[in-house]
Picture 1 (cartoon, rainbow, N blue to C red):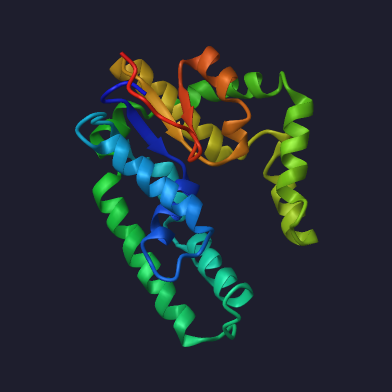
Picture 2 (tube, rainbow, N blue to C red):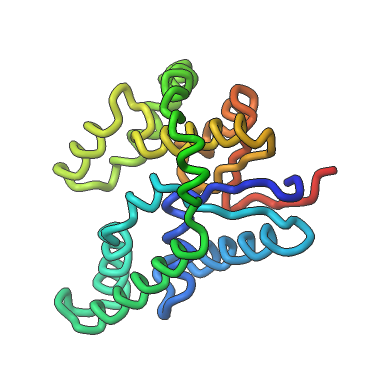
Length: 222
C-alpha cells in the first residue's frame, strides 16, 4: 500500500467497524478486530491514507436497516434474546449512533462528489469486465443466495442481472475510477464482498484500482 492512498470503504466495512465498537460484538471477533486494526494502520502516520465513505455507501446504510438486521439476528440467534427485547433496541441505537459518527467523520465532501458526478460513464466498462467471467459470476451469485429464504433469494437475483454485482457495488467502483482520473493518485476499495475480492487482479489490471480485504497483510510500497 502506498502512502496517502485514497481508500473508499464498502458498506460491509462500515458495518464491521461499527459492530466492533459496541458490546457484545456482533460478528466473529477476529474479523471485527482485523478491520479495526487495518483502519488504524492505514490512517496512522506511516501510511497516512485517507479513508472515505461515498454518498453511495452512505445512502445504502442511511436508514440503518442493514445494521439493525445484523444486530437483531445476532441477538436472537446467538444470544437467544427474545425478538422484541428492549435490549435489542438499546444495542441497535448504540450501533446507529456509532455509524452516524463515522459518516460525520469520513463522508466524502460535496465538493469532491460534484467533481466526480459523471462517474456512471464508467459503468459500461465495468459491466464489460465482469461479463468476461460468467462462470465466476454465477458461482458468486449462488454463494450469495445459498442460505437465503426464497423471497430474499429472488430479490437478490433480481438485483443481479446476468449475475452482475449489484448496482451500488458497480457504482462504488465507478467512483473509484473517476477519483483516480481526477487526482492521479492511488485509489483503493476496502471491501469483504466477493464481487470485489474475486476480481482483485482484473480490477487492478483494467482500471488501476486496488482492492483491499480484511485478510490482507499490508506493507508500505515505495
